[in-house]
Structures are given as C-alpha cells and as structure tokens.
Length: 222
Ligand code: CDP
Ligand code: CDP
Image 1 (spheres, rainbow, N blue to C red):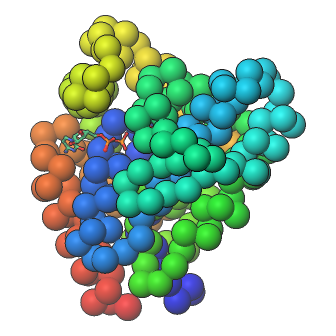
Image 2: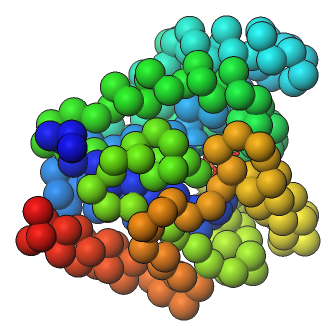
Image 3: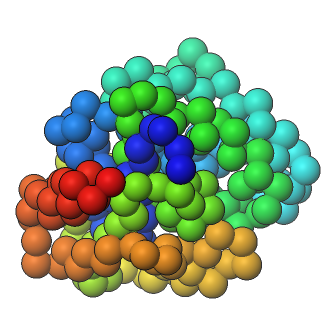
C-alpha cells in the first residue's frame, strides 16, 4: 500500500477522461497527470524531427529525453507552448501509433510515476489502472458510445479553431479504439476492480460527482 492516493481514470478517446479527471483533481486539491499528453508530445516531437514512425529505438530515445513541462493547464516542449498543437488529430493519431511500441511506453514510465506527489494524484489515460498505478486507491473506466464521443470531439476541435468533419472523426475514433484496444502491450481495457461509468447520457459534472462519491466510499473503508 502506497501512502499517496491515486485515482486512475482510463477510457477510450473523447470519453471525457481529461475533463472529468481535471475537475476531480481540482475538487480534491490533488495533482493531475494527463498521460496522453506525454504520448502526444512524443508524437509531435517525432513529427517535427521527421523520425520514422517505425524506428522504435529513435522514438524511445525521444520519449526518454522529452523536454516537457506542465504549468497549470499549459504544456511546453522545450521553450514552445504546444498546448494547442498537441491536440491536433494528426498528433493524436500519431500518438496512438507510437503508443503501441513497448520501448516508447517503457521510456515514459518514470516520468509518469513522478507525478505521484502528496496530497494525491488523479491520472487519466489508457493504462493508469492496469499498468502504471495498479495499486491506485480508485480505478474508473469512463466510456460512451462512439457517436457521443465523436460529437464531443467535434465541438472541442471547432472550439479550438481546428477544422473538423463528423464522418472523418467517426472513422478516426473507430480506428483509434481498435488500435488502442487490440495492441499487445497495455491495451485499453478496464482494470481489475475498476468502476465502469457509461457517460453517453451524462454531463461531465454528473460524471465528476459519481467519481467523487466512489472516492469518498473508498476513503470511508480505508
Ligand atoms: O484525448 P484522447 O483520448 O484522444 O487521447 P489521449 O488520451 O490524449 O492519448 C493519445 C493517444 O496516446 C491514445 O490514442 C493512446 O493510444 C495513447 N495513450 C496510451 O497509449 N496510454 C496512455 N496512458 C495515454 C494515451
Ligand atoms: O480526455 P478525453 O479524450 O477522454 O476527453 P476530453 O478531452 O475530456 O473531452 C471530452 C469533451 O466532452 C469535453 O469537451 C467535455 O466538456 C465533454 N463532455 C464530457 O467530457 N463528459 C460528458 N459526460 C459530456 C461531455
């Protein structure tokens, strides 16, 4: 048993992990880890340096020495603010490809564990409860229909000034779901003991409320 609590929130793309995890962290005064951002940063770095996406060795070196910083909700790569750049669909798709490479995943483990600091951590991604924090105090698997998720992503992209097309988004999401759940290492699946939360007909705030209730119950029984 680890003295610093972790709430692990995993789920498919655009299920609301980031939004829900950040709000839960805020409510509890916990730190927040957006593990997907680390894969996106590695992807952006690879695209910028034109590293071939099948060169696992070079990609894992990039991941190992990722010059990234997080300040509030801003993300930095070296001295460049890449908060918006890493949200582009091309970067997400590239992230999902390189995330299937075992050495890339391994290179990012230490960085992720380092986020576990007092008084606690809320971490979101694909393998927070299964691989990175198997001893998390609470594990949640957030999900929603592919249509609901495509709609959420569409609104988000338009809001950030990116172009978006619903049919393409649906296709991208299906491909990404398939890749993330079929890969050999750390595939997307609910961790043992995870609470499943289906949010197709829920607001983000309702999902936050449910997670906080589960966490309160965990603490009562501790
Ligand atoms: O926001 P969205 O769910 O689309 O993606 P993300 O969480 O930012 O992650 C981008 C990609 O990184 C995902 O498609 C996953 O393939 C990969 N990822 C992963 O493999 N493991 C994690 N813990 C987080 C992300
Ligand atoms: O991190 P992930 O890719 O799973 O999702 P996100 O980046 O948090 O995006 C989810 C989007 O859907 C945000 O714009 C939320 O406001 C919205 N949303 C949600 O997160 N949860 C709901 N139950 C309903 C909508």
